[in-house]
Length: 378
Image (cartoon, rainbow, N blue to C red; front, side, top):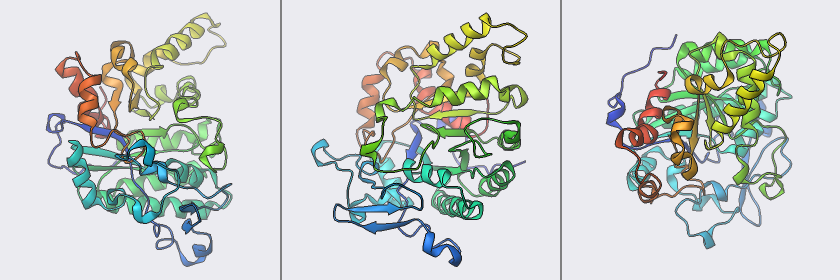
């Protein structure tokens, strides 16, 4: 079992504002400088194109540009999917600069996730298991070093490989030993499928034992990545895949077998939680007990103990927080992505949280994230 190091702000009241979902901008040499020599010709790399710079990843349909992943703070009319790496704000890849950017926004701590399309391609492209694991490990090593600069203010979420539970458990334990790593994320079930099976249980057991929340960021990697302009679902449909994964976890009995496991629906907002709870409970109650999912509680109860979400902008969710569960909501800035209000998050929060009692406001803006990412249940 992992023993957590004690840092200087361990009580949640030491943090006033915590982003439960922010991002890094992976540096151009992340994989070319870290992968074994036998993989150098295949390493994810950044290349220059006429429109701007983009990542070239094996198996991807198109070069993956990143302008939207570094546009926080830019006027809307200056935003573009294509940019040059030299124009990326340094806090995306330099931890010292990142602390200054946190200070500009009044943020005490950020939980850091990868660039979504890059991470999705890493988890989607798994034909060569050894290459897949090596790419995941290189990212986790870089993230661990980034967070080690200040483990009180930089908390990383490591990626897990999905070429079998054994590889995922090994990487979970390896990554968790690094300073600042506070959670793990998956892009598919550890066995590599979209269907949950008992073969995935060792990963849930390992995350539960280590006190590491398990995240899915937006949704599973269901296809090879490409030009965002060709995507069927826009950013306003971020919650589309998550109800499927939550239903699989609940009806698959995962939280009965691992009651301490915390699952995080990241960047999917939370307004839809009460609806899904209601519908799952209604269908569960109407089903023949002999044929319905063999779980110990009604489905909605697991939301109150094992499932939490992050949101960027969700006025409706804040207004209906008691139906969602105040203890299961976490604010995020999404910095440095285009969904962020950096460096004016404080102004947005003041508007969105008007009338919210101080204790509930603190829980959503800081306390819940600190508690969950430190491995504690409600």
